[in-house]
Amino acid sequence: MNDKLFIGGGGVDYAQRQELTLKYANRHGLVAGATGTGKTVTLQILAEGFSNAGVPVILSDVKGDLSGLAKPGTETHKLHVPFTDRAQKIGFDDYTYHACPVTFWDLFGEQGHPVRTTVSEMGPLLLARLLDLTEAQEGILNIAFRLADEEGLPLLDLKDLQALLVWIGENGKSLSLRYGNVSSASIGAIQRRLLVLENQGGAGLFGEPALALSDLMRTDADGRGMVNILAADKLMASPKLYATFLLWLLSELFEELPEVGDPDKPKLVFFFDEAHLLFDDAPKALVDKVEQVARLIRSKGVGVYFITQNPADVPEDILGQLGNRIQHALRAFTAKDRKELRLAAETYRENPRFDTEAAIREVGVGEAVTSMLMKKGVPGIVERTLIRPPSSQLGPITKSERTAHMAASDMSGKYDERLDRKSAFEILKARADKAATEAAEAEEKAEEMQPVLREFNAARRFSGARVSRSTSKSTRRGASFGEAMTKMVVKELTGTTGRRIVRGVLGGLFKGR
Image (cartoon, rainbow, N blue to C red; front, side, top):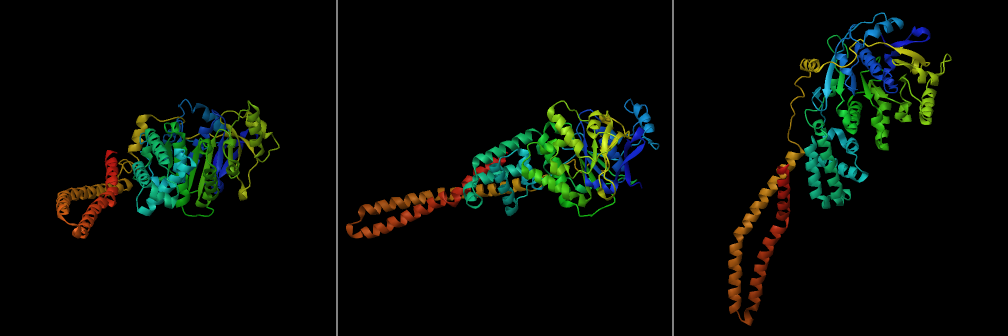
């Protein structure tokens, strides 16, 4: 097996092969460039190369074009006609058309197999980011997760979290003594954000069966890595949902995969398209988390490649870890654009044959300046490169072709049916129902005691009318007994049972949901 991926032709007349060494592919990478400069085709040929090398791939299909990876290209396809000449120009002599093994996924379950995770697996940090919570609201969310763990309340879907927040609101006074102020206003704000998330279709992300990471790391019978394509054209209407899901997936890979040291090739390659969505308005704690994951996940054999319009979209600390770079054209219309272009050029190892800044500004569609890690992980000299043509179809497949492909997939039927096992919602509902029943029984007993109390009070009043001063002590004793009986009933109704009645009303709210 070849230990390098052919990227394109560089140097004089594009005759010099530009290749990505598999051994250094888990040192991460960057594909950048303005709209329409060829980033999607570059992403497609990288996915093909990794798949052919036996490396599974995860990528998001933002524009719907990457579904063509599931179908071989053809010479007669209008978008492939110029590619035959390009293959000859760069010395791509073994250029052939073939498809990749593809699995389609979709958070909404429409253009791919459903993708789900649980609320517990998402965790409070990412969920707070998804809901755009304030610091105080995030604190309430952390309390909810802590209580879920301590009380044995599995948080699987959104109704579990909503039910737990209601319970926290009803018990806020006692919880405040332990966890600090539990504001009903903050709980209400979180509930409203959860409602907005539901309206955006985000509720489908949470539940079971949850996605098993092993299903993303498969190879086919020929040893080619599976290309996992997440349909993201509809998902992009909710940018935070898109970014949070991919961040969750990245963090799950980091948490679950074992250390593999320095493998000969990656175990998995993760492409994050529209990478700027990761960092737009992201709190520092989240950016620090991404930086930590990017720094350490390569030891798990995972390569992360960010695709974005401008390298400036990626924080500097993370950008410095991206060793393999493919830079398509950048436009410099403003002073800010020119400054960012200059900074981008300064991150490359200079080539004496041309000016890097000018090259980044001048390269045409399908052309880029590239720098790949060489022996011992040293950055290669920057080179103008004509990107190789893809072997799979350029452009999307039809809806019927996608449907047929999904039906023939190994994942067909595994995630289609949603499960709803006993979790926080059901447990809290059962507690509330039990409390309501006990409250009703206590109220019934109290009503049964009312005639006895009335007779006793009547007898006490009658005997009190006939007693003399010498019997006042007995009267006081009788009065004390009657008062004690009355206080006992009142205490039962206004004490523990009274609280149960409140929880019984809460149980009714659960039923209403």
